[in-house]
Image 1 (cartoon, rainbow over the protein chains, first blue to last red):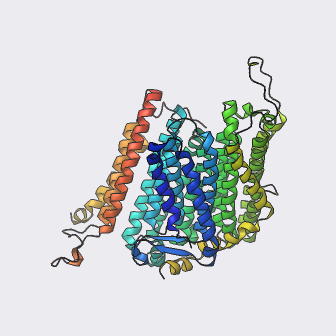
Image 2: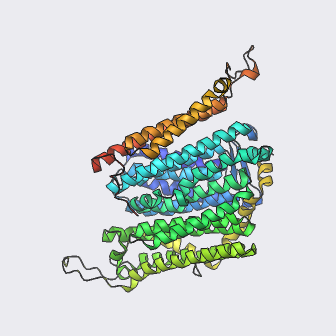
Image 3: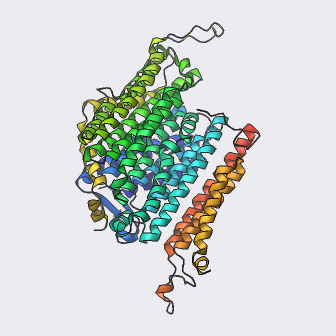
Length: 499
Length: 119
């Protein structure tokens, strides 16, 4: 058996070894993140069957449960740590050749710290510990957004930092309130005694938690930083921020609302917030001419969809929401990775400059198409299963309200389809305008400008995963159902921790 | 005056948080915004400390005789604040270094003038 502590400790140790190894050789650093993430991936996969049978609870420091920091490796935590490790592994392989300039060792160290923070957030069972890991995640992402050091990067990083810090302060205030009322920081211990105080006293900390985590998760009124930050970071970082960081924010909201507060009366609010976020994200994405901003706004839309699914609050709804997490992580990372080298080759992020890419970079274009179709929800890709599950669970509520909501979700999907098809059309069906002013450009044959092998391997793996899970969703439903059960079954969570 | 006497730390903490938020919302100079962030952090830390504070309290040392357990100050919030201060320092240092780079690029720290990123 693997101890879940290793999922956090090993990448952390590797992260801080990178600058030390830099004294020996400047080139070792970039090989450390793939190793650490491969370890995490294997360890999570080994833990998975065990965790489905029964969650693994680790009490750090050897004290009994409410007095120590607990790690709760349940199905949700292991599902997320698996996803984080998979995405982190693939993106770090992509980064081997992609990151060529700047302080490379620091990039790799911060990248690993970001993933460590994300893994810590999903595994911890202590609310202050969650805040600390969340801050590790946030601070490393502020730095990585500014990694290129250009005008856009520094500007969006400072805006992201200001907004993110306000969010973190809100979380800390909420923790202060919760500690003042219950005298404990253990999530299970708080959950046990949450109904002993009047709901009005819980309202303020809950709102502060949702606002604070909502900044990082880019919920609708708090999403101003996201398009700037995601579009000005290097493509690898955009992929990780979009595939991991904002999802971890949503995870934190779900954990606080479902497990800690057991607030079933607030779910309708989450549904409405999700729909609003979905519509705003998709509509803004529709009007973008910059490919990375388009993808960033599309992430906001996806986050809205996930929140909508979680807010449905039934077993199927939450399973659908968690499935959508997988879809979004795989597809959006694939999209960002595929566009990474396209942008690098043409030197511009305008969609119109990508004309004719279908001939010049056929594999990257194919990857982009698959990612886009998967996000829209076309079969046989993974997005079909998750959207189908969400809509089915909303229909099962059998109320007029939810039927209207489904209409809004489908409208969002149509808008999403419209802008993704527009990009795909530009890639394949528009031949490059012959620019007589630049005839000196080297003529490449078909596929002559294709991305290097280190970029194509992760892209291939992601494409295969998207298609295989899409055709055979049973691969993931085995973990999705216990995971949904864990979020819904508060009593079970409390009993497991305070055994 | 007994109200003030009892709740003076809470009032102070909330006051600091609100002052910090006001600065962040109303000021446009990045340095001033960072100062607002620092004030808000201080307010949050004070709030955390206040929760565990007892007037004329003692340190929670159980092995030492003569200390009344009722008067012991809760040590957990102090440990939390220590962590929060470290995090705050990291964020402030990062924010100031970003401000330096921003000034090098734009020649100003007025956030109203720095808006290349637009939706």
